[in-house]
Length: 400
Image (cartoon, rainbow, N blue to C red; front, side, top):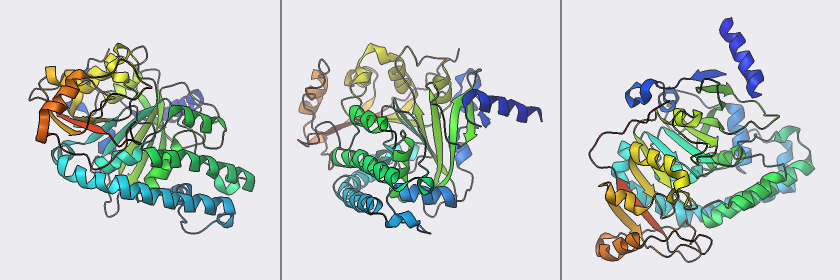
């Protein structure tokens, strides 16, 4: 009874109803027996209602069909989504999956958790590169938002929703990354409410089934509260998040994708902060970054950069992430793919002469990259770096 009262108070405090995820004493990876990956791995079944809603958000018919699926707006969205997805799958995803199966073989075997900061709701790239990961952690400044109530909405609202969602995902499927300005413009219209519907689109288009959706909120003690999904009426202060449990075809063990609306600049992300405490227990972690606005080049993001270098078994990134010199000076084993070019004009003082030289000196050891998804998507000059940490133990983050 006392626990129920406690949870009710937390619901009132956070504007949504839950359960606890505890911080790990002393930041020890070995103590992480209650990690999200371990929790998700228990056998689960798909939730029929959520699975159907996610299918409709993805432009897939689902069964039973809703009467409103005869509306021209939904049919137009579904047809456009089919076309754009097929093109993206053919030119990017399939070559990416073939490449990753070979060139990321060792990293994929070792990876339990995929950490994807600055990825926003880009779940599709995450599961295409690391489909075996039991837990994926996405981060972005964009709000978590709400799932749409399509059955209770008006035809006019649904028309606007599917037009806005189509604009958002079509832009991504054309370029392979989100533009923050465009995302904020779509979100400001109030129909596509945050990252959650976009993740739903990618998850269901990937052929996965949905088992559960939970809210995540930090407690006053710095732990995290997991809460059954309900619509948010007010937007919480960052950081806060959402966790989706999903199922691969033929595998009863659920996996999880977590999205955090958060700021990882030093002023917000520091040892002892709630988000740091969530990440610290994660084991067997690989970090992936692409189209990361070169934020990890700057001292304002040195804490999350240090966290990546201290905790990751592997780092897969383009040149917008951790500068090459950190891997070289730290004794990491590095493999280079694609071609390095001067950063696009939107970013200054981030060129890496040492990385350019490494590409030039690498000769035949620099492998081609058979797909394109970065800031230079028009010119198709892309690069990826795969770094394997040296044989030394983790530096355990200190939790204050």
